[in-house]
Length: 562
Image (tube, rainbow, N blue to C red; front, top):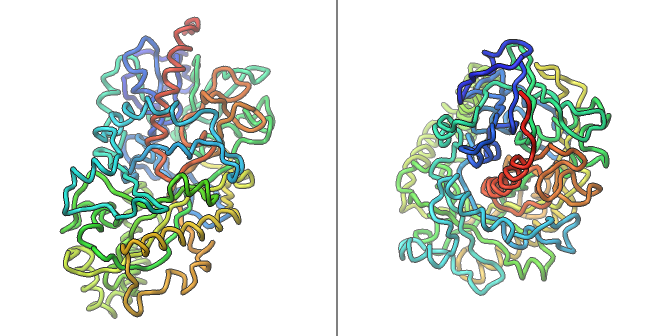
């Protein structure tokens, strides 16, 4: 049956079992890509239905649908690697934004599988609009102009003319996109956001050349379907390939997987803390480069800036040395943070924060508290000093800092998302993530670290730390940091990569799944190469470009019979 009269933001749990909905465009996922697409088509003549798995707040049962296995490079448990409610992972995003560099999209002989079907100039017209979506203010990343605005009290590092350069990133004023755009979507007469709606399968025709129905379910048990002229997957770098692999009625290997590419090239941005240094001019430089200040905007005595900065190899140096892109910033070291008591308190804080962030119960707090309490009591005086230093952050304290580098990963087809035989509460196979780094990734880190540290030292920016602070995080040798000290950024990318050749990519230059006329993918899963910055602004720009393509297509197609 068809259910008329849905509210602009409604709940799938109110639908009768077996309901059938019709729409022009079905958007699967209400994160950055899904919200951008809905905003771009708001007010048009085309009906848009956004299917969001979660509600307006975190819910443990829904969040648990993200569970899965991780079998490669140590990685975040999948159930807490993303946020599954309206707004998607923008709900746990710090708001950092910087567009791609020209070199990020280029085919580079020293980077295997590199090269987008188009250059950065194709995305450039959409960055201004992306700034409006992300509430970033003017689209300006020029360090010279920002230096004039910031004044002499805060300055960029003096690396100009060297092998490295300063790069500005902007901070979204409203990073939680579900909250930022909820009212506008509710007011759009042609957009419906359906909450608690989980997509379980994309049903195709007999040749798998078009999607005929989108099968959905709610955790309460009801099932319903959506019939749409166009379908766009906006569910993230793990769920997008998972849905394609699950939709295997006609194509046994999964929809769009004729060349065994769906789920391959999975990656995140490797993140490594390395050398401990001191700043020659802490007062002028720390405010722009210290990530601890950015991530704790309410910290006393911290400058509240609309931008932050990092240092990166120039494009010319990347070409000359065969490096991939990267960004290096500072992480302040606080008094007592290495003590057992401080670690115990941090473990307890993270447990409670995850409960609040994801709506999950996790391990009982009681045992964690009982294990932490003796460690806290035994070192109470040192812990008190550490807490005061962390909370008050006295500006007169001369600190040491750790250099932290985020690296552009090497595209690797052996790093992938597949399905397990285990199933979730909806009866769907859980994903298995096998994140693999390469010898080239390690070499890129080693040479990038040497280049950046050497540049900062030669410019007199950094000084050697005091005795006892000079060792790197995993010992005296930076080489020992790989791979054990490699972290991640919760950026899931590459698993439905873009390429005009179906033997080398899952989607074409417009995001259409090869061989499926009305199925598209949006988000960072289509990135062939990733650069080293946060993907959100590039997801939004790429989705705005897709919105124009879809609007033109929908205008040329016959009406869908309800």
